[in-house]
Image 1 (cartoon, chains in turn green, cyan):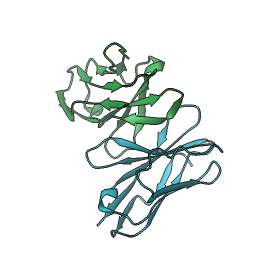
Image 2: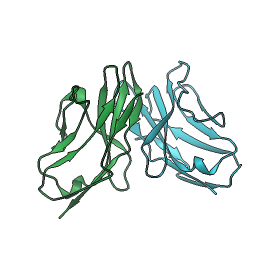
Image 3: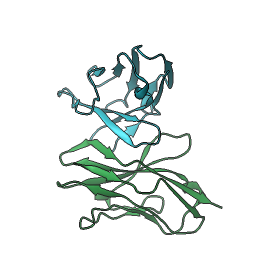
Image 4: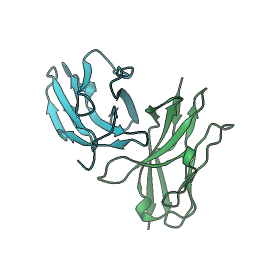
Length: 110
Length: 111
């Protein structure tokens, strides 16, 4: 069965510290993976997608098919990064039907 | 409009009543999706509309749930005979050959 697992409900770090939000997936096909973010009192929005191989707001994520992971990383966390982060998996041939993880709240302390 | 618009933003209803939730997608977006987010959980896929194709209803949890979309515009999600476990935030999103844009959601509370 297809599944996305985010093992941490809450990740708390100090400003300037490195951040890694973990995401593991289970899918036998060719995955397409995304990270979505929801800042306080704002709507859910796309942060980045693995096929773009880009860095957004200093965040990067690399798809590791061997480990079936798509961890989100940032070398130096900022207070404005505090938000809820969701990892999502799109099944082959249908990027509309996303399977989401349960989300990780990132709290960056001053 | 500038973004995906959902109404109502909050709805409190009594168990057994029917509710309708509305989604107005971004103009020109051919794809429209409904997701549900229960407290403390991730987003669950409910239904997906793409243009004039038959919708993918595989995520609807029971026959009490139904959704319609008129052309490439507004969609309505209807929940009949609501139950307490239907309490959740219902999110709508739309897209056109690219990333999904989400609305702010409709928070449903069933007493």
